[in-house]
Length: 55
Image (cartoon, rainbow, N blue to C red; front, top):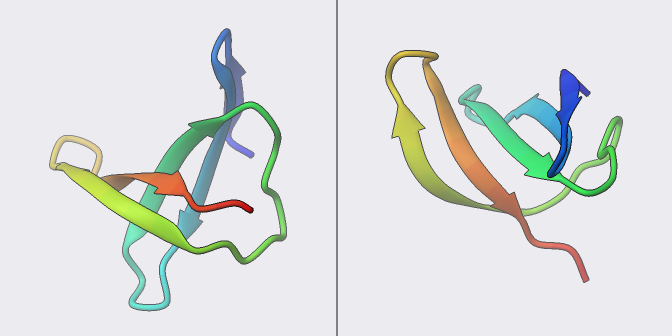
């Protein structure tokens, strides 16, 4: 977890192809492997914005 906002925890992780991925989610996803949908690339930070697919 890289921090928190009013919307939730800032989760930063890497894909299996080493793309840095960032997501704000209501709960921390630390040390969990979760599938995610890539949404947009943020060139300023060199990372993808993603949505975790949790069931």
